[in-house]
Image 1: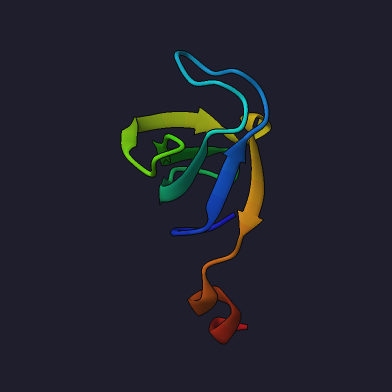
Image 2: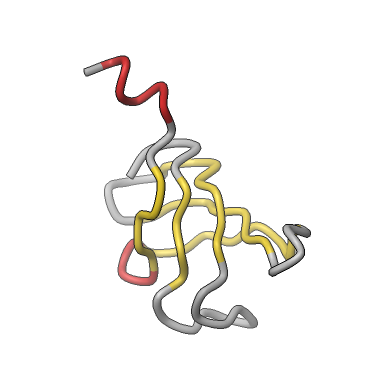
Length: 68
């Protein structure tokens, strides 16, 4: 997972429910990220530092593909 990829929450985390989607804003390590999550109305619910074990990659930012 890289910057601007979209992810989905696969386990409850703090006040977020399974299924919330978000965008990776910062990559601290291969296992820790800063993610902004959004509700069903696409409104931001906040930014969270979260481990990869809670996340599923659902969309790869297109510019990553160009770098390969």
